[in-house]
Structures are given as C-alpha cells and as structure tokens.
Length: 177
Image 1 (cartoon, rainbow, N blue to C red):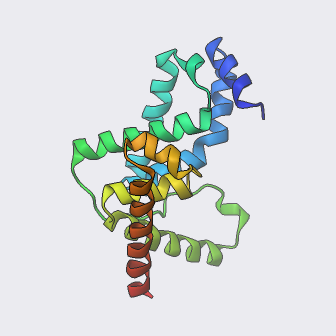
Image 2: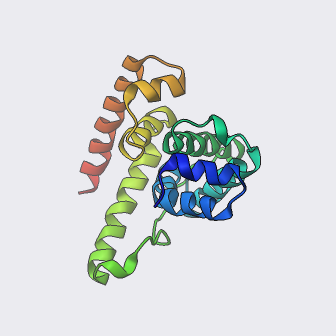
C-alpha cells in the first residue's frame, strides 16, 4: 500500500484508485471508532460514508499533513453531529460488524462478539467527553496533547476524562462478570 502523502496526491489528481486505497487502509479502524461513539453499526457505517463523501467533495486534501489523524478527527466530529441530530443513545449489538469472520473458528467468533458487545455497551454508558477521549486514545492511538487540542481543553482535563472513563468502564464491566 502506498504512503499517505502519495495517496493524497492521487486523490488530489482525481484518481479513484487512491481513494479506494485510503478507504481500504483505514476503513476498519475508522468504523471501530465510529461504532464506539455511536449507538449502532448502521449509524457508524453512515458516519464513515459521510466522512469519505465529505473528504472527496471538499477538494481540500492538499492541506492535510497527517491523513490518519485527519480522518479520525473527521469521524469523531461526524459522530458528534449525528448524536446531536438523533439525541439518542441506546444499547447496541456488534453482530453485524464482521471484518474478517473467516479467519477464526465460529465458537471463538461468538466469544469475541459477546465480549465486544459488553465493551460497546459499557462505552455507551459513559459521558460523551470520556468516551471520546478513550476511543481517540485507544482506537485512534492519539496522544493526550493531540486530543486536548482537538477538544479545546487542557491536557490535564483529557487525562482526567480518560482516567475517570477507564475507571467507570472497569466498574461497568466488573459488574457484568
């Protein structure tokens, strides 16, 4: 797979293969992030597709310095917008989230799905700010400073949100054991 800067060049020149490669490279990661922030897989898929459509139609990819970070932030922003529109957070299932189900045994896949459901349900119980920090830090592999800049808060605030959120997740997941 090509380096991100080369892929951005291809997209800027209207090359659909460059866009396809970007989508293939980041789809699973971005969908996981969207799914962690939104109430169901269908909404998460819509979020991802909206981000890709906006990315293509904006014609402003020349100013992007870190494609991965840009896409993660775009997904988080889109998820926030969708949550504001729906003002609804419900318990969700991940059974339809099927990245590569042929790579593991069916019994192991069922265990993985059940464990994923528990984590998604626990994440859904967190306040948005804590959930966003946890998802961006763990799934997005973003540093606290970068998250703080994105959320327009101090690094200490982000670290506190993360710590409180992780503690709440431990509590939620510990009760279900």
